[in-house]
Image (cartoon, rainbow over all chains, first blue to last red; front, top):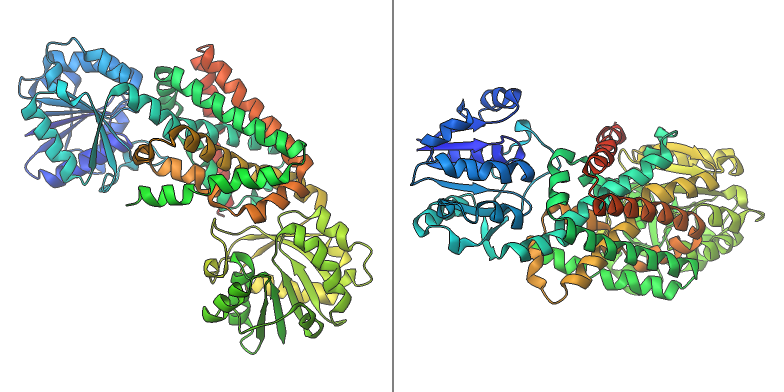
Length: 283
Length: 283
């Protein structure tokens, strides 16, 4: 079997590592616009060989793990040249524009739209790790548009990688993911910005920052090349979450200015139930 | 030697555990407004015995790890009754109101104002852990107002616990800590609120949340009883950081509404240097 991974970063590389372990006889080919990434991925054992785009004409599996603006351009071109029995999936954090990009393609049934909810704040082939997807959720959109036999092939891989499958329509995915992922990234980036701007002349102030600060700004290490197109493609939903977040922060500030400390206590107390929600996530 | 810990939660309990290991001959007494906390702390081996407030008349060391609104009331009363050779320190996240509460006390020289930058989002005696302070920063304010011999006594303990000492005036502490700690907590609480409010009827949506969301809302598990008085005592600085944070978020939203994706990319790229800053924190 031939597996082609287009974009050998954290996600693509980690899928490559798991695929190699699950299909030891398979050859994993890496395609990347950055030549150094291919060399690095081979050296790290993340992929077996480098390849070029046209090689996907020989693929059994194509995994598309590139920024979402690139994905919408590449996906129709991939479907144009793959063999009839091949299955293609993407892993992007937006699903509506990606599904729309292939909706009328004659080979739409060779594509399955997925979003594995996994990752770290690191990028590039060196960020790839075995077992990244164990116990994680993989959201699959518009599954009915994928040929049944090819669904089975992809699902076998996702299950073998240890993922839990959730089915959802693309619009619902994009709406909810804006709250539980996209907003967190902006909140983190802007928190980092606020502190850096203020403390730029006093670098040693960061000695005062503890693990709490580190936790809240962790996502501000994320790649702008990956995240700019995500915010672009999910603009409407992201703007809405930002409006609500800013309104909640403004209300908190107002309560503080008005010295309504009972209300401030209640605000925090009512959010404390996030403990149980987060514990639920781990089940 | 007799050590009295007033408030046997995460911080007080962890100091008790380290102190016991460092001074094996010492008796550690726990004082807490919650009787169950005393029982729990004894059962867990966090303290040796329970005690009442008046017992600090026999103390060599008094550690005050209570919410900051309680600290400003208790500290003068503690100084009223401790022996002349005793040293008292607090661990509060605000320093100006605490220093002001004892500024004219005849026993001001028996007090040292500290803020160990350590913690987790958990509270109560069961949250206490050995070694919590290893490699962490302890900020000491107005050290010149503490008797030299008593400074030495406290510093020996802080160093033995593995803490790095930073000296700072109380106003600078409160200004900077608003950025690197207090703002993170509000950002996290309001992020939790925004998502909970939106998704309250769809609990299973939290399946979509990954480790990124978990990281940014971790601090929303923090205790309102501890944090309300911190925000109250540092109101002016906290309001200022919130204004700047809200302005940065609003600007980001505006860039998104105007579809200025180059600017959005630059915003994120310029914050990416938080990587190096956070790595610097670990040195």
